[in-house]
Length: 289
Ligand code: ADP
Image 1: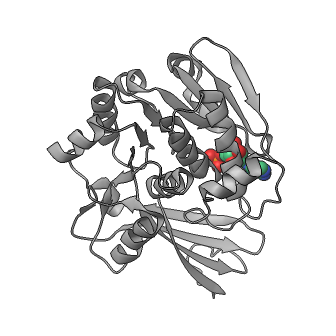
Image 2: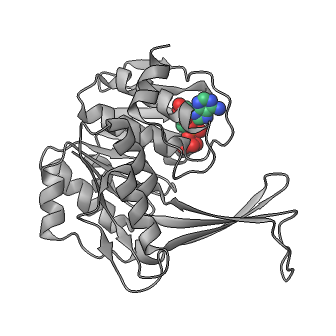
Image 3: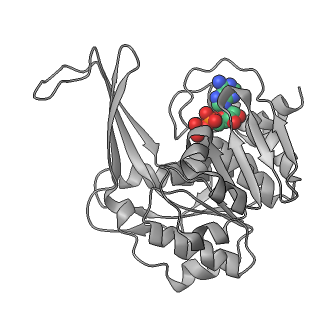
């Protein structure tokens, strides 16, 4: 199975002619409610990419406000298991997004429930120890990610980390990693000491595809298929989720990276971040072209 340990949030996007200045009120044009959070996005992407071959479970936290059912429903519809989902009193994680006519945005992210998971329970730890791969990002407390990753590594379970939003990584987290998936900005921020310490390094290059560096130091560059992007948000999360699914399926790393590139490219052809991941059949079809 793929276990994703991470965030789940509601994305509220208002479009407006221009972004409000401090103290200003502007009339918005449209309001959309999307499901997001990098953990949710990667879990949905992994489940769609796995196409039922591998179970995908999500470990994270929702709140008790009016968005709880929307978030849980999004996971369930994608086929992501919610056995380990926790609920804490208060709001769900929320991103408040303003988007203007020039596609400029301002975003406030309130972690809310995502900050309140607490400690992994015995059932969570058992699930991680028995997983095919653990997938994490950094929108939940660092201690939680360190605890999950070190437990996985101690049981021989591969750990895939997408270190976003990028921040300094504790040495024990780096030591627990099997696969690090970074974009070019994250790679620059982490620096060579961290990148070189990880057995499998995957650097995504946007429309140029991705680069894979394996444990033997060999580097393979994989182009992305040519698509017509409408919204590149969510491409990185889709890439990470698809890569995790391919990794547990036992694909060779460079081949898994190529397949994830196809998934990431397809994600750019749909709007939004949380519901843009392609199905396995769609990835296979474009990969075969
Ligand atoms: P992030 O969204 O984390 O910054 P990237 O922009 O590197 O990540 O995109 C992740 C992956 O999505 C890329 O490796 C590629 O496979 C795919 N992708 C992103 N942008 C494009 C694009 N314009 N055309 C085709 N594929 C893309």
